[in-house]
Image: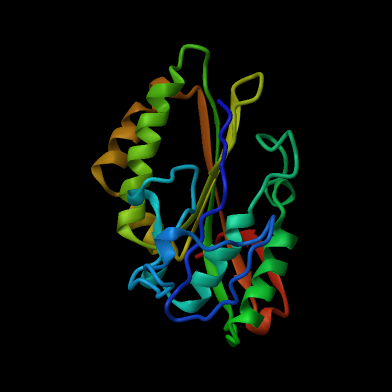
Length: 225
């Protein structure tokens, strides 16, 4: 199954002031961001996954400035390699472009970036030919809505299985605590219970994305308590 992310949907956050302008491959405001006449709504929402329904959108008013800025930058996340299912996680995505976008947004918002670490999960899997992908999709979508409601879920991306059924999915969270809460609900328990029949292999890797003060440096390292 090929996932089409579609046009990026971005809303302006109440604690930050961004310059709004139409650009082909940059952030664009949408109807959900503004009331008639151009006045901001109290809550702004952002598409952060392949799912565009309201229950899957990130409420930017629920997170602080660093998390808002990273979530906005992550709307540009894209895969760089066809072999992402087995390739190095860091080399599979356009992290340098994400950080450069973050620098631009931080500068435009006149925000003083403070060093922040984010919790990153990479889920590698393999599905057998017997798996009905539609069933897997239903479980995944329900779990994502549940995780979004719990808070702090900044980005979700997944690819399409390769010829051997191998795939990669990744999540970026505000914190490990948010990820734990997001995975504790009934939809996640149902998905976990079905994993044995849906996957022939799965493995979870955890990383820490750290972005230094004033965005002077950044890195992705293995997660350590």
